[in-house]
Length: 407
View 1 (spheres, one colour):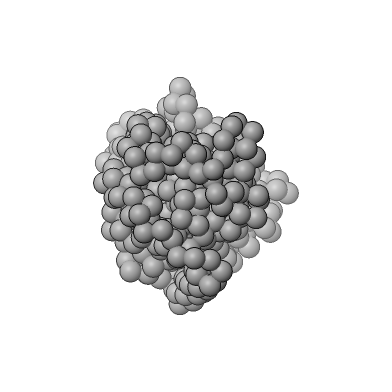
View 2 (tube, rainbow, N blue to C red; view 1 turned 135 degrees about the vertical axis):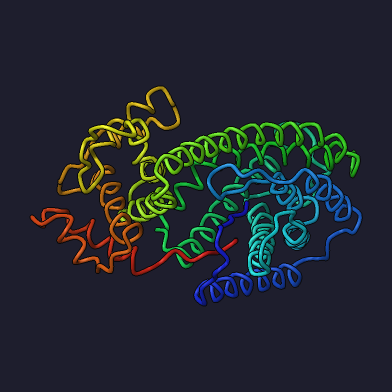
């Protein structure tokens, strides 16, 4: 699994984090080399060939900036076929030849993570009782106990390590809370990890107990390509949703050219506020979308004649925008936020977050006013009844602009 970000600026803290992960990966590979024999060249080459075939298909972007590739299956199979060192080297290889165009720091990070995941899979498989002589296994019981179950445990270990590493770099580079990134990754890739375990077990059974050797690569291609097709359908659905959002934002900006860029900034700021406040992944996603579409209701207003005066938070038009989204299933959560208006409560609501982000960017981003966060909050809410957590979150987000990392 890889994560990409859209901005090239990488902080020094991110470079330190990447260097640390690389150091851990190198140490793990060296420990694996000292602890066991080098991998058999034949199976290693066969795995490399299968890697090249899957590489030619590419990976799928399935959630925001999270990409999933079937090369993860090879890391699991390699853990059994060529051991921890071989699996680690396969991981470095497949990440190093990724088709995604990324900066060198991102590619190095992905290679380190992938290599570390390969070593982890091999070590955990063995520690969980996985057989080092899988070719000699016969019967459902031995194959299940000494191959399938240990591989499933290895999948779990890989998933945990991967989430920790990705969540770490998102925290260091962009300030995203660890819990939020972890929940997003588990929600979007948890079921797929189980599928990885099933396909990797099938590949290993064909390779070793069935005695087919490298020929199993050919037989495994059908289910692998089927899985790739399924991932592609899921990714296409996500891309269609993102394109629909882009079209709606474009319609807003076409009608309101003075607000070009406003929707994107509000969506990003609202999402960051929600992240900093510790909201769940689904809530953050809906708040980001509501921020993007908070001005949607204005495109239904007449070009001439009386127009209702908008409030500072834009809530006059938000309800109209919510009505326009009725029936759009994937925007149901965002529509509910737009229809909710802005309420002051002890716990900031999604509607409050969007309203605050919209008003702040209108004042500072659109009208280019030189306001501190304290000055803005006093102007936005003269009664000072906004939740303190919300104003503190705004100050934090403004003080820490989003930096990019293409990992």
